Length: 321
Ligand code: SF4
Image 1 (spheres, helix red, strand yellow):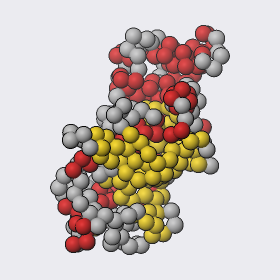
Image 2 (spheres, helix red, strand yellow):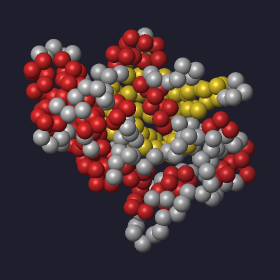
Image 3 (cartoon, rainbow, N blue to C red):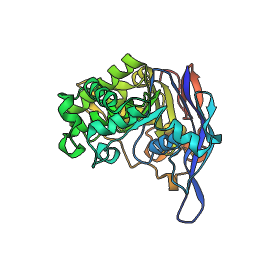
Image 4 (cartoon, rainbow, N blue to C red):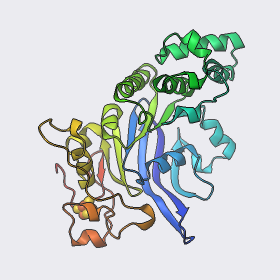
């Protein structure tokens, strides 16, 4: 079942000149119940702005068009109160910095149990459930940890506490924006294993935003590769990583040593990401593309389907390339 259906979503922000510029343009994807969709791209690719549009947390000066359906409900037509109700109950968020999400002046147990109490639990029931939830997300000695404040926990434990907080409202979708970027590799892989387990146990769907291809390869069923605010390529993660159709996806993959054969050295991505406020004409990737031709500098490639479930925006993408 499709939980989140994003169709031709665009987000415009005013440039210094005052002109509205699309920083996200024509982006479409779905998140199905129990599955993980990964949004990947370099900084400025529009992935975080897309996630903010899904949450209804765009900056005041932004305008948004297209369609955003949540469980069959038109979110762009919903009232601010309804969007707030969906956000935080049906959709929860975890971010890179747990300190920004956790209240520094309340113990972890209190923060989690307050959410549980909204469901009608008594104070003692909610505290017991909060401790059980902390244990479920792998916080050792949850009784003691529940009495601690965020600054008293390590980075990995804070991340787990934030995940417990996000799960307390029993959301159907977890939106994770670079949730493991600030963690060291060992803690990162523990948190990723935890998220995979939670998904298996509770059928939680996730929209996972990351610049890190290895992380997305680890968690995602479907992947959306973004470049300069647009979709470069999308499809089942395994197929996209095995046989990318778009030169940008190929370059991203080539830049990551661990997702290639060990004998092949990593190749850094050439050039710098396109600035969405100053996109080159034609294909925005053409200044960095190794196979760009004349047409690429003049005509923007539309997103098209090459094979079932896969879409690519490249004049020269071919099936199996
Ligand atoms: Fe490269 Fe041209 Fe394809 Fe853009 S359209 S990715 S420049 S080949």
